[in-house]
Image: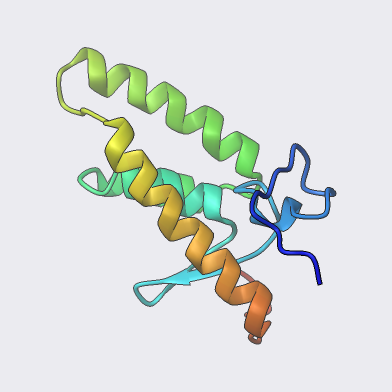
Length: 116
């Protein structure tokens, strides 16, 4: 069997597209379900802003989550209330990839809906 040393993907339909934050895989983190890892990733960025987290968790599309989060980030960074570092984002992404890997390996029973 050939060893894979690098995994790449551009679309969720690609062979490893299930690793994308945009893939339709619900994940459980700290007792709560998230519709996809894009939602989890963005919610982790805004942990100190529960009203934003609640808004993002209520959205269905990971792309809409990403766009809403971008707007919130811009406003909060301009006010000096939020600072997002690349290092912190890498840790968030590693967490999301670990959660997706666990799902792919074990295929646990997912909830009928991704409600919290």
